[in-house]
Image (cartoon, rainbow, N blue to C red; front, side, top):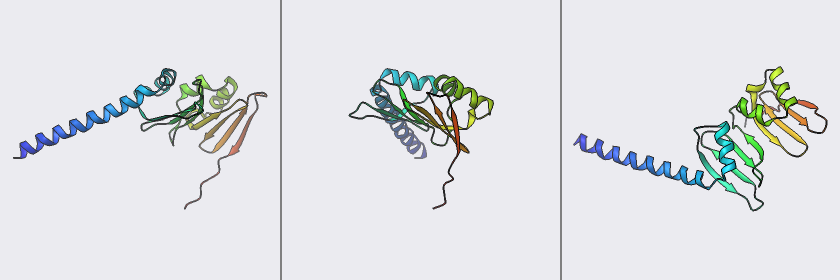
Length: 152
């Protein structure tokens, strides 16, 4: 009797696993290839938990157990939120302006960048104890303390 129950549970678990994998593959298949390439370059071996394309063309992807990413309609990244995990150093090296990356490296902050947002004028980074704003036109980097969250 125990063998039969174990066998039934094993079959049920396999079915659930296959259904789960199928859902993730389906989400992944809907994401535009340039976005898939970007994700695979910096978060290899992951899969998309969700994908949405807004009416204005903005694309949002949430990686399972990983970051949330937002892209423009022409597939340039707008924001990457690590949700408490530091962003990969390779992403910072490849996607930040050289002066900003050099600053992060010289101050030993590359492992403390938890989110990045960019627009036509600035890059804004959230670090463990500070926020950095890099102004593209001037190359200036401004640091402000991170605002602590108060207990609820």
